[in-house]
Image (tube, rainbow, N blue to C red; front, side, top):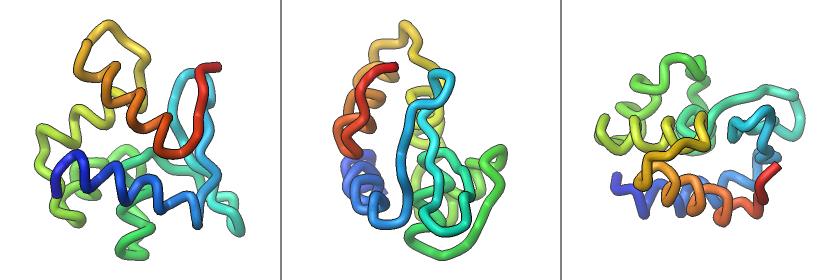
Length: 103
């Protein structure tokens, strides 16, 4: 899976999750159960129905065929509004995909 394919699936995951920025972190709350997850574990659950702890994002990335370097970039973008230009660009793409604005 490429970054572009991940963004497409992330956008589709709005069917299942309410995506929010909570304390600077991009997180999801599942509509029915209240389950919270990060973008990687959320997309993994959306695609596979396998629930993986958000701390084990590498396992979620492997389940959906996302290379580790892209997974690290997505996590950096979702968890930190930092000075890394690449992370900033991915964060913008994630926010735009699900209609988030800065806190």
